Length: 390
Image 1: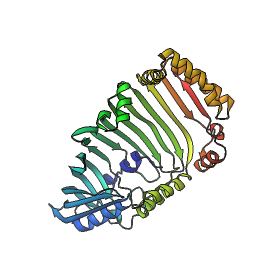
Image 2: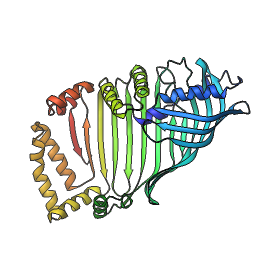
Image 3: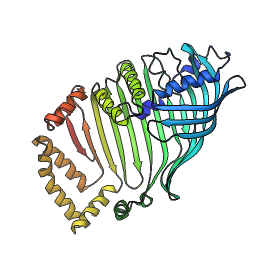
Image 4: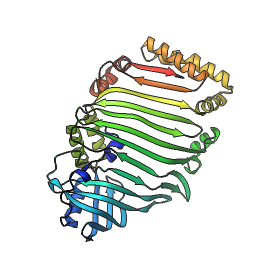
């Protein structure tokens, strides 16, 4: 499945490459129609009460309605698409889009969005065949903070987010960087008594963090690399994800666009179709690493307190149970090595990594079949390995 970092932030170099029609008159309604057709491929419906062109190259949309799949629609009074020029295949390049903030309310829950500025946005024409240019891609974007609150108290918020993307050349590579600042979760505002009790016991009533991600998509061979994506939670842990999959070709990207369009009003059908398309991918490598900042110790103390044990006794008990639990996987060699690594981590929590590094790419279809018939075979098929404190 194409990660959101690529799906929504892969850019084009179209502004510098295709600026030959900069002085052509802009038809605002035609541009909106082509924008609507493009967003439909991502399951988004857009309508506007009125369209006007100001200064020859600024398109103003008023009374805008946005709707994604089966979610409630969002109303925006107006926004401007600035410095619009025509592009090949009857497309458009938008120099800058400024979408203002808005709020939605659902009973006692409010969602607030501060707005976004997008630069270098490409709108594909009706005859465009390149799936990259049809994918709502842009050069960079900066989003203002968002907040979800319940009864006036913030449950979740995120600060400024930004995405920067490399130039697009057919058959080349696209690289993307994304950062989300000031992530915040207040578990005491969720309204769930059990969650509140648990997080208070762990002394994690509120958590602050950040998210960073870097990725590359090789359009020539279909390799998709995320290296790394880091979710950092202050005074808890850092989670680092890395993976490389093969088979994400431009042909598969086109098929996914058409699938999203066809199933935009049926999440279940879309999920099934997505699962089927994933079987065309190969797993080249993957890893997840936790770098502890106190989370592990707090969890040990929490579960130990439930059994009336101190930290040392809880760790000893867990290490004693590990071989029995891991033996159920049906791979004695992996069980022994994994038990040793986890035991080392529990004794001195620094970092723990689980990785898959098969000698050759493994088709996802093969993994799904193995998971159904013989789950233990996944360990050898993926060459799974656990390492502690590396």
